[in-house]
Image 1 (tube, helix red, strand yellow):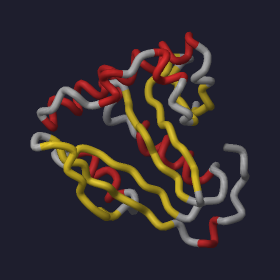
Image 2 (image 1 turned 45 degrees about the horizontal axis):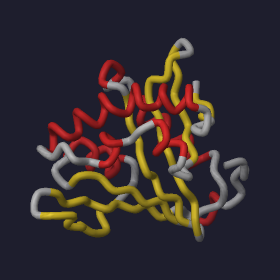
Image 3 (image 1 turned 90 degrees about the vertical axis):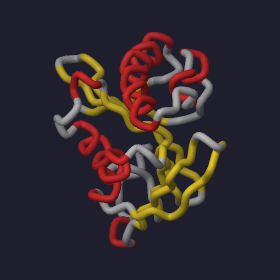
Amino acid sequence: MIKQIDITNPKFAKDVLKVQIPSYIVEAELIDFYEIPPLKDTIDSLQQSGETFYGYYISEELSGAISIKIENSVMDIHRLFVHPNHFRKGIAKKLLDFIQTNGKEFETIIVSTGSKNAPAINFYQKNGFAKSSDMFVDERLSLTILEKKINKGFSKRAAFL
């Protein structure tokens, strides 16, 4: 089941961190860079993020989450993660599909991931995203930015985000 997470509630922010940290450790290992911002998050930084979070629950346990911000008809996916115990169960796809079909009107979705994170890049490309650019953060880290244009036929979505 997918439901919105009240990230301002410390209990829920703590639950998010319990899933986020192990997931991003896997990414850090893949890209050989351990200074990625999600690994430094705290309950307070999540609460102050300004992001809207949705969680995927299995038997009342948070198993994955996605967070977004929407500005000027662009949905920016800030994070999408699944606990390693629940990899390969389709949770990331369900979360991605959920925000695409249940959000406010938007024309473009953007997301970034480590350029060396081939599984994430492949996931987004399989789901209709195209690489738009690469951004070099420093000599050890580059990010690949992907985007997906949403066709205007989707503009009659429910506006509850």
